[in-house]
Amino acid sequence: MVISLKNIFNDAGNVTQFTARFFKEVLKPPYEIKEFIRQCYVIGYRSLPLVGITGFIMGLVLTLQSRPTLAEFGAESWLPGMVALSLIREIAPVITALICAGKISSGIGAELGSMKVTEQIDAMEVSAIDPYKYLVITRILATTLMVPLLVVFADGVGVLGGYAGININSDVNLLNYFSKVLESLDFIDIIPATIKTFFFGFFIGMIGCYKGYTAASGTESVGKAANSAVVAASLTIFVIDMLAVQLTDIFF
Amino acid sequence: MIEQSINKEPIIATDNNGIVIDIRGLYKSFGAHNDVLKGVNITVNKGENLVVLGKSGSGKSVTIKCVVGLVAADKGEIKVFGTDITELDDKQLNAIRIRIGFLFQNAALYDSMTVRQNLAFPLKRHSKSLSPKQEEDAIKEALDNVGLAEAIDKMPAELSGGMRKRIGLARTLILKPEIILYDEPTTGLDTITSREISELILAIQKKNKTSSIIITHDMACAKLTADRIVILKDGIIEAEGSYEELEKSDNDWVRSFFI
Image 1 (tube, each protein chain N blue to C red):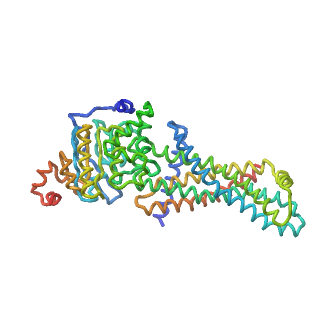
Image 2 (tube, chains in turn cyan, brown):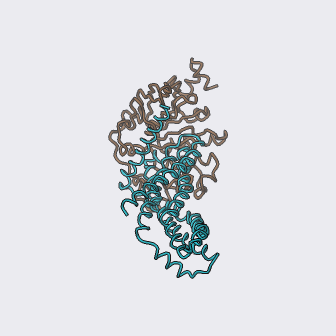
Image 3 (tube, rainbow over the protein chains, first blue to last red):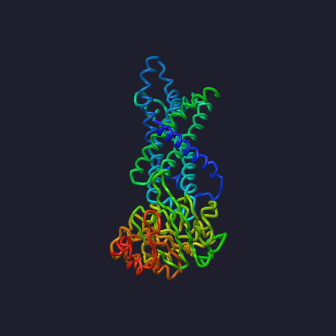
């Protein structure tokens, strides 16, 4: 009991140090621009198909599931607005962030973990290259920037999925559908939901990097780093979402 | 020309009496009951190949990792080119690290980069004034030195164990280090490839006038490359001398390495 408590405090201290180092070094040169752009490509562009398919299915399924209930009240015309609001305010950010936690955080954890185990990180250090700057800062910045963009993409594709879902049972014009969607949306719906995705992105990158960078020696630790990165990132997403919803209620 | 382009900052002190590495009373433990080094004293002279022998877990690799600051010493003094690296900040330590090459046991090539990118990576960071042609020439020269010019566009996964070691060595050589630390350079290789690597170590010493510490279990490698040998036992130096002297040692345990 005492040992596990000690481990929890040790871990908390290490994560805090790791995060503080990010803020201390992020603005200091040298800037690894090329690696940052490469990471944006790997994290953002390569996740587009997965996020797109998931977003489309989210919109489609949400529409199909909500339609019978709204039909009971004769409120089918509210369907486009309801689907858009649900997707943009909550479902698309959280589901996309969870997908990114599974794909990106575990990927970063496994990549850095295997680099650590095979002494590639040590090799950088002995070549007088700062591995934290090259590997960690670039990845965290890339996830912080790319996850919000992926969420915006998922929002758009999800709304299109909703259109497809509505047209399974009825015939609605695309222009009409989008005018109803836009009528139901305010900036207040979009801004807090978008702000929280930057935090999702930051913590997805941070947790993946921390787990990989601090992996123990041995190949087993690579799997552990990837696995624990997904679990911790997913849990963090839910905690951030809960706080964000509370803060949105207070301020907006 | 390339050597001049590498941003080697002037180090604080120079070597003293031809000694490039001077380790005094080095202690290191991992946890309360795991004392790995218990007062190691090692010196390496300029242009000398020092081989470190010892059983697994005797602290050989930890010693050379302390020399480049990868592992922090608990106690003791590690003077490289006359500067105690245990008292340096990151920037000062990096200025020393540029002058030291380190060949890892498994070569530690960057998996996501080609051989060319692996070699260009440290070069680009430390020699910013190089033109693309000079950079290409430096990479080709380093690969020629290890006899693997044809592997320039291969990925590390496409290379055999021996080739990986040679490319690792080429990457180490590209910054023209004055000291090279070899961590078990022939481990996991067949007899012929091991001999080729050992001959390469010797050729590099002669051509570049480098000083080296070679950690090995391979006695053929030790015999071929060593100017002097130290043997570590339980974290302290048990014996020191030339290959021939230690081969005839009165100490049975020391002699057992040479059977």
